[in-house]
Image (cartoon, rainbow, N blue to C red):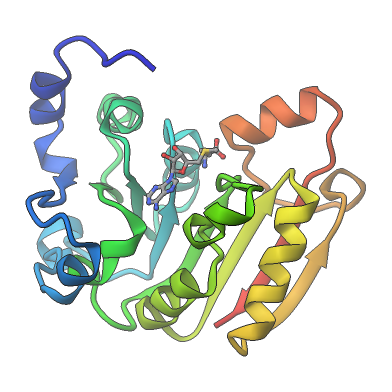
Length: 220
Ligand SMILES: C[S@@+](CC[C@H](N)C(=O)[O-])C[C@H]1O[C@@H](n2cnc3c(N)ncnc32)[C@H](O)[C@@H]1O
């Protein structure tokens, strides 16, 4: 993807609803050990449950969810600012008060989001990365699940959707390996009446191709 024009100025204009992680520390493990917690009280004003989307892309999902659920505070995380800018600009244009964006790699989240401070994590159409050599980068690899356990409050849940069956099966194995409780598994979302499903950009594309959508809900 080409770098968007005036990206830095556009990110700066979203300052009130956007935090850009410190990219100075190249060692992700060291970066994750630091603590620069987002001041959620200041950011959101009201102490509502926090839902976190990891890999939000252009933000269609999180912005729709924030508009539909004013009783929830949403944090959307994406590692590529070139993609995230669209999400931020759209939230600003809609005047959403209950969504904050964080440009950050999922590996470093404990630096910015406190232990037990999130009640739900959304993983929507995470990159399946089918090659074995990339398994550690998959967002449902056990090393990420350990981070999610840290971020989630008691009883907190992960809600996952994907079009990729092999990645879905891999994710279910990872959840079980980490001792997580798989609450529901759906192998064809279209054949189930999941009321309140908000369709993401990738979901719309895959549905148009006639692909099945897989969904799981897991308690950490
Ligand atoms: C396939 S896209 C899905 C976008 C959106 N959730 C949707 O359903 O349309 C996956 C996104 O996850 C982001 N991503 C992948 N690995 C990540 C990581 N370690 N930390 C943060 N974001 C990540 C990618 O940059 C990409 O934008």
